Length: 144
Image (cartoon, rainbow, N blue to C red):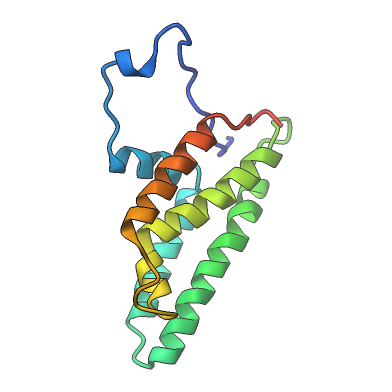
């Protein structure tokens, strides 16, 4: 069974604006999350939660960043291992890895970036990044 996400085909004669669907923040977040294996998301959220419980603040910060880096590394490796042999996957691996970066920034970026500086994370920028990535990923050809 393949685990790569393929966008549903859209009727080009029917503009999205007339399809009766209004998109909100959660729609964009869910779209980006669908590009990332659920095992990676679940593992990341579990480990980042445990990292927050570490009493030593320096170890907590290092562990949180280590978990983030682990998510970046494991996303393409995991998808490469579960992809169907006869399906194209290069663009999927790249897009899913970038999706993990965007998703992690939006969902846990504040926690991570506060270890550097309390004023570095910006929710408005995170929202713009999420919508922009969602739009770009929709036009990225996944058949390569």
